[in-house]
Structures are given as C-alpha cells and as structure tokens.
Amino acid sequence: MTRWIELDGVVNMRDLGGLPTRDGRTTREGRLIRSDNLQALSEGDVRHLVEELGVTDVVDLRSHVEHEVTGAGPLRSTPLTHHHHSLLREDLDAGETVAEALAVRWGREDPAPRDGTFWARHYTGYLTRRPDSVAAALAAVRDSAGGTVVHCAAGKDRTGTVVGMALAVAGVPEEEIIADYVLTAERLERIIGRLIEVEPYRRSLPTHTLEEQLPRAESMAAVLSHLDAEHGGTVGWLEAAGWTQEEVTRLRDRLVG
Image (cartoon, rainbow, N blue to C red; front, side, top):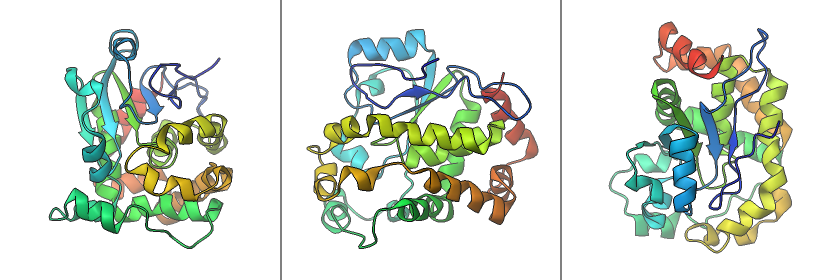
C-alpha cells in the first residue's frame, strides 16, 4: 500500500494510516497526514483534501517569518480550522519584525556539520525550547473533527518530530516511526527544488548539499531515545506538559482503529 498522496501542489504528502501498533492494531487512514508547504495547492488539490479525504484541520509548524512572507495559502479560503504553532524560540519575541528576523536569522549559518547528530540536536531543541507549540500541535490532532494535515516547509524536520511523537502515542513501534521519517528521502530532491528559489528559503538552502539535508535514521532514533530517557516516553513528556491521561487516550483513540 502506498501512503503517498499525489497532488499538484505538494511533493511530500503522505497518510500516516495503515501503520502497525504494538498491540496488533493499525493506525487509521485519513486521520493524520504529513506534508511539505501547502502554498501551491491547486483548486483540485483543495477539493481532494476537504471533500474526499475529509481534512478539517491544518497544523502549520512554520515560523512567523515563513508564514508572513509566503502569505495566505489557498486553504485559508476554506472553512478548515487552522493552527499556527511555530517551533522556533525566537518567535516568542513579539516585538521582532519580519524584516528584522530576515536580516538577523535567515541565512545565518550554524558551523556544525549537518549530519545525523546535527539534526537530532535540532529536533530535541524543539521539545526543550518550544514545548508549548509541540504540545499544542498534538492537541490539535487530538481534538480535530476529521483529518489533520501537519506541515512545515519541507515536511521533514519539524513535521517529522511532531508526527513521530503522535505515532509514538498511538503505539507504533520505533522502527516504523523511523522508517516513515526516512521515507522523505525519496522526495528530497524535489522538495528542495520547490523551495530553493522561494523567499525566505533561498537565503540558506543554496549553501547546503542534498546530502546535508537527508533524513537519517539516527536523528529520529535520538529524539525517541531522548523522550524515553528524560520522560519515560512521549506520553510522559505530554504529561509533564500538562496533559491528563484522558487527553493522551483521546489522541491515541483518534489515531488507532
């Protein structure tokens, strides 16, 4: 079974249904969909998502800069519920303008090599620096009336972290979570091709190789290990963030048939 959702305006959208869980069940189709940027969806794409797939909620993990610079996408004209939860700590500064953020942050280079360890550090950073946004994104999935699309720009890093945690709550084994994460590698060249000439991504993407952007199994494994070591797993992390056991169960029931 292919989980890719082929639309005109995205290249990295897939349904997270059909994955096995430790208790012998499977995740439900149409409940959680991961994606790259949704700005280029066609009218037919929108109809397919809303009318055929039953999407009711969109969780946008991009920064305020990305959100403002790229403008309102076509789904904004629909009655879908939109949730914007930036995973960048800098976005807590309400006084910073988009122009200031572009000048200061976009294009600024981290000298560390972009290997699996580099990306693992970024992903665990989302959990420690913006737990509010991570928990809120997962709550949107939990409380949605239908299907939820979770996306960022590439649908790899921020999206991969949030949906990986959702799958962990659903009881999907670690190896399956990692396998889904690395599946983005099949579309990476097309993903970068979409973004490399677009503001604000054109400020940083041209300076990095495709190899540096690859989703590596060890990166997602490190996130899951961090959650286990520090919180006893994703459920423990959510409870530390204020979730009740009933809320955890509701998320699991949304995702598992």
